[in-house]
Image (cartoon, rainbow, N blue to C red; front, top):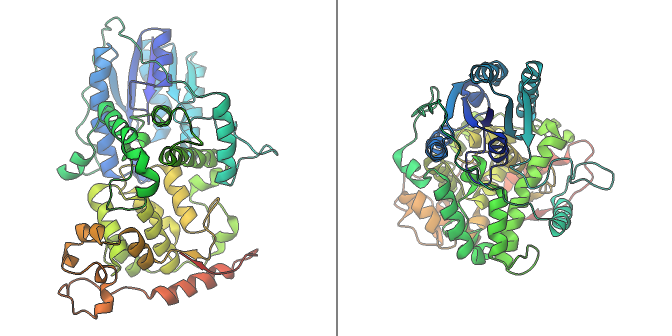
Length: 481
């Protein structure tokens, strides 16, 4: 008997470990509930709910193949080895199959499980699945992990030219086992059930993920490059939550993008090329997790930035978290996050730069807050994005590049449609006034909208000074976007 231990790979199709297990013999699936670990990792309640809803869909799909899905609890990952061993002994399991996960805690957990099972004669197989390339296989000429995305992408392109990762065939129906699937719990203690309106935005299941992918690659991908930066437009694929939970795979995404672009990934439709680059950014940050493990332990990628004199400003932090900074594009983006579990990518950069540069608050505060609210929360991508914006990370924005929220707002939400959707209290302002109501001196019929909590110009100077004072800083200059 084979056991597939499901984690962030909640799908039946193109699932490497599932296919490998089923090819070896009768297969059972298990998912571990680990609430204590999830709390320690700042996983959002809406994300945990999304996992449970996807598990329900997957259980039904696997049931049709006679593969039972069991639910067990290992409150903390320290308990995973004992819990899995117990299950293996009960079911007389010969081998356990998993898809690789990345991050310090994930690697330690898997090593501990493998060791415990091996001692009892049970083999442990792990497979490359959530990435196109195995970490450690895309390296510089000096055999080190890339620190710069453009160079990483170039090598990935060369590798893809030579061989495209193939899709894995879904397993067929197996003989019925005398084991019943477990019911999937409706909720997990410690994680509140999100609103129905949030759930409705993110229907569970592979069919929905596939529908989104097909809709995007059939039509929207052509406009992706030109529309992806405009938060009021439906310019993005809305697949990030499905990729993070493994309801769809990067291989499926890559194949669909190539199909829409006559097999090209460097030429042809600029929208398709841009989207494939985004898949490779996701890949890059996962490789960084493995190559530079300190980033998954709350450490800055650039060690010299650990000396930054971040401000301890709880009131400013709370104003940012609660969408009352007095800067409409920031507040609208934060409301989108709080109400939908998701934020438009351009705005993730804008609000992150505002927190780390204009408020000079430690990027880790923002990273944690995002993880606690994002339905697509992913350690590698979230950490990579925050460290990029705060100029502490790999391939990061130069420290003197500081997005101006007002010019970003005017450029990417020129009609104010996004702002007015999320801040209805500003609905009666015209498209010029809506970006900066403070200019109206409080005389604009939305008296409950706060004044800006910070002066953009002086706070920018403060950030430049803080970064310039760091040891081993050689670059200088000023470049506002």
